Amino acid sequence: GQNIDQPTEMTATEGAIVQINCTYQTSGFNGLFWYQQHAGEAPTFLSYNVLDGLEEKGRFSSFLSRSKGYSYLLLKELQMKDSASYLCAVTDSNYQLIWGAGTKLIIKP
Amino acid sequence: NAGVTQTPKFQVLKTGQSMTLQCAQDMNHEYMSWYRQDPGMGLRLIHYSVGAGITDQGEVPNGYNVSRSTTEDFPLRLLSAAPSQTSVYFCASSTQDRGPSGANVLTFGAGSRLTVL
Image 1 (cartoon, each protein chain N blue to C red):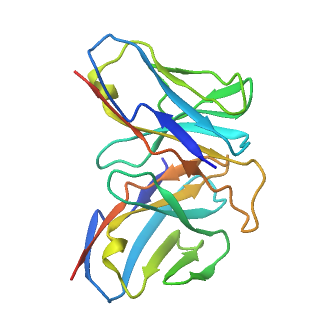
Image 2: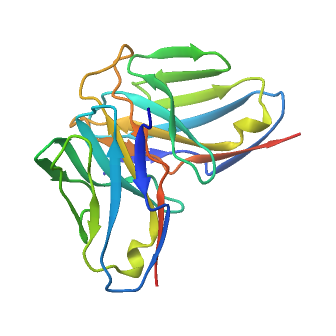
């Protein structure tokens, strides 16, 4: 079966750095997405990786290792507004999205 | 530019009732989809469409119908509501062409919270 694993919840301190991991086992691979979802709101796109390596976008970076079936989202200089759930999703060989259950990130002052 | 508009935001139904969740997008996106989101689970695809007149089943289609008569609209119909359909429903759309990053990025509606008693 297809599976995406993420930690259920993480806590970090304002101003710090946090890394949210995602491991996947899917039928084929055609890209990995990270979405942010604030409580009660819609998911919004953060990043996309299809090749191995690090993609940096301001305070957020996303890393992919296809051989290990592994990705992480790195958030730097954490702000209170970063408190949200972070969803990892993989596009499989049929270009269907497989979603993880999400990681709830709690930022403390 | 409104993006993806879903209505209603909240709905309470009794078991056996039927209803339609509306979804409209103004971005001329070919691809539209419906997901449900339940606690502790990833988003699950119910139905999707790659263009007007074309629909297909996702991972959890039972109990739901869709139609795509226009590019803009993609309503989701619950035929006979059951408590297991209590969930938050999201409509999402994207272009079929890959953007500069190579990704088909989904744009989500604000969600519809449905409770079936």
